[in-house]
Image (cartoon, rainbow, N blue to C red; front, side, top):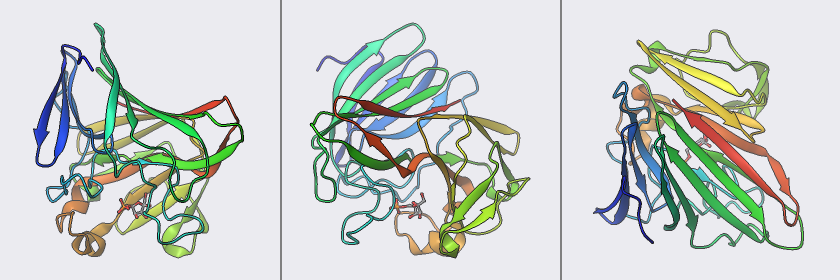
Length: 279
Ligand code: TA6
């Protein structure tokens, strides 16, 4: 595969890193999991994503931070608790199928080795299209290549960098959420939406625009193709319990995930795109 001029491949630890460096931004993408690890626009040089200092880059375990791809299920598998959380495509090597340079951006398309697996009976082609420019556009395209419909869940499980979780506000969410920490009971979205404890919520609203204000930084998040938005911060106790997360890691991150948690049916010959734009 010929790489475009603004892309280069570097081995790091046990995984291959794709480095994108164009006039608009710098980004790092692990081919293991097609996992975006960093995105820094050049106009302000502010890193938008958080990556654990203890993240495992061994090509065997999911990477803590950046943008994990959850597919073909979100969270625990609906019927088989033995299967890995968030599906199986973040745990495998992807390959580059296209790489384009334009004046505005670098556009990379990647596909996983396999899309069939225990726990999912669909025949699908999965493509991740990453567009790196002044903004980062991530499109996860699920195509039904079989002759029967299937339903999937998934998420662009983005870990955003925040200066201080105690001085951070999420704007744009309204309506009800399901609280995973309280047996998925329904609650109203708080305003202002600030954080002072472990938070694990599936918001049933589908806003196009969200924003995270943290210190004097504002990160804009656009979503499309979603049926929910997941908001997660493990807080202190969970951070300490996770080997791949530094004990105080929770203070510098907030997950805001463009998600399909209720289920998206894809008919034969049809496709569905889950999209998040970060700027
Ligand atoms: O998106 C929130 C969540 O489902 C949490 O419940 C927590 O499990 C988080 O994802 C991280 O999951 P992981 O499997 O990457 O540790």
